[in-house]
Length: 397
Image (tube, rainbow, N blue to C red):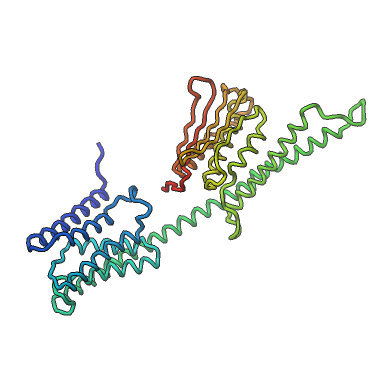
């Protein structure tokens, strides 16, 4: 049985108090014979801005709009009652809503907007006594405004303090991540690059020795058929690995303000991947425009790259590999299938630890997509399928 957290209980109690105070405002206006529609419009707009769940909040409902619109309605309500010389009450519900919006403005709005929206909410709160007293210079109105100033100062101060805590937390997280990136970059440069460079040098020496080493019957020898393309492929793969590693290290170290920090790989690069994969040669189908968001193209590239790598690692007996990239209805679907039964001749150390698919899943889901992997239905082999949204609305954690 699950129990509610103290934080959830406190939030629920605060929402309940806010709703009760708003009902009090409307009850007072109704009992005194005033129209309830103007205060209801202000309260409903303000409550929606305060209580709208963050995970369901549309992109256009920015903190600026959330805090400015209810405050503007409140100011308009006060000005209209003053101009029309009408007497209307103001209650605790609207006061608390405006204070909540002031907190949101100071804490969450961009710096320039925080000042403007905060001042607008504070002004709306200070102007509300005009509805009843028709002036701010009576003793009662001045006393209410003095109390409002104290509440505004406390609310804005608390919001500014929490904003400073958020900033410090973000700076600390950024510094920690940078230190981790630098440590990873150092390991890539010092260890992985060292071994890949060794592979490249030894492959180049093997090609040279195979073409120039003498034999007992002749001064030169020819390379066995098919060996040179294999060595050339190893040399090319090692060269590409070093180039990719240099780019990765540069991104991790954030080398220079003009460094290209975009993910490596795009739809055009998928063709190069399939051409380099020769055993067996994949069948590639691409039906997608080349102007898709780069992060989507890079994710598609990584899906194909990881899938082909896993075919080489875990299904060396595969005779057919199919790569299909299709764009339809605002989504990019990437599917890689093979008919391998799991046969491989690679050593256990080269099989990987399953982290490739974990990282691939994180990359795809970060863009709001889905990744499915598993055996092919009704036929031997394996299938990897990724579906990525291309409308630019990535999901953020």
